Image (cartoon, rainbow, N blue to C red):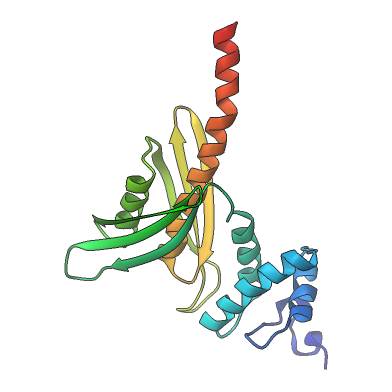
Length: 201
């Protein structure tokens, strides 16, 4: 029986934790991602971790996974995050970020878990960038849906964005914020030669 016979498009078939590498490669190719073996191995590990947390992995989950893979590089990486939240204050975040290969840890309090997490990031990587946008979108339906978080930062006329996806919204928020900061570091490095050239002339 073909998927079309029951009203499903072939690209909408659900994947799960028992899906193998070949199935993942074929699905990603249908979605427009043609990966080398080493890239596939990296994505497969992350796919398995996602499939362990979700019963069903949809096309949109895979697209979010690939987007997150592309944004997961830079000077800083989120290594560990634990938040305490609920009706009893204070809310806090215990965060470890790897910065230039060195693990740095801090605990911060805030008005909710995301605020506490963002304050922890700022303590570990001080900066003057203003949070101009924070958006959360559910990738799929259900309580186990991945959340895609988008963050936009502004600093001295420079605008950068970051994005990340996770079944834990706070984790996605932390990674998106750090992703935006990684992009800001790149933008800062690109503008310094320009400034030096202007001052020399």
